[in-house]
Length: 116
Image (tube, rainbow, N blue to C red; front, side, top):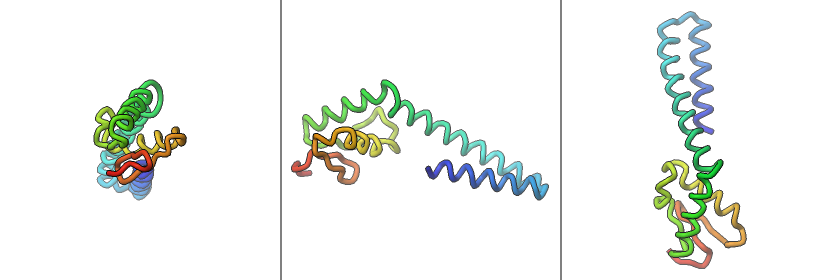
């Protein structure tokens, strides 16, 4: 994940500043590193809420309902999912339901044969 590599780069920068005894740079780097770790923790918590446990069943029901009604499931309609995870949710649904013959076009999941 990009977030993880960002945290690693920041940690390397802080470690270098500490090694060089650049206290000011280390202090600034630590603040940024703490913020990046906080953002990563939030992302992990959101990911768990969406994809692990009972949250996924709700997402799956919403996607199934949209496909049944419209033949498509727009990511924007997955309002219970954080925006940055919506397309991932559609991709997971598609992988878990190969029998439905689904296709991801941009940020919408379609039953193949349905027009936009």
